[in-house]
Length: 225
Image (cartoon, rainbow, N blue to C red):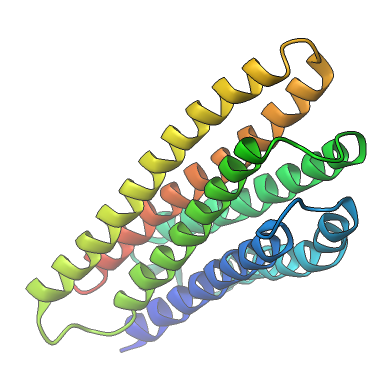
């Protein structure tokens, strides 16, 4: 019983962190999803919203680690997976913040970025949003003892397969965006580098979300046998 309570508490902390990633990405998407994003809108998201959600994720990780350190570690199987999942969620927020900051810098010198490249930036963020929702679903499926272990395993595996598909789509979007950036800004190396840093950071965030899903899946499959 104590072990189940401990595991449920840890999963709840991971879910809160994942929800913070989902909310942060949603706020950023709202800021750039219509027309050409302005530096003012992106700056507001960067300086207010992202800081708030990054704090949520950081505190969630610290709380999870404190719980492990101060609790009875013998009652916590798969503790390494919990730790790795929390670190990957922190990675998501770090890369999301870095990409947003670089986008803000870019918009200060490029008032009207090409629509087709902005569409790829949005698409990367949408994949991050999808990945964070899937991550919450995987963790939610891990919360309670299963009535049907086979169905529960299939649910977790199906969700994880969707996370893998989202990560693969993000890779494809990144490659096509990079080709467009090189073609458009071949004569403007500073802008080309800044745009590349934007998509690098957002694609890295999706990779970190996928890694968090990998560890969350292992937790979910192992918690109740």
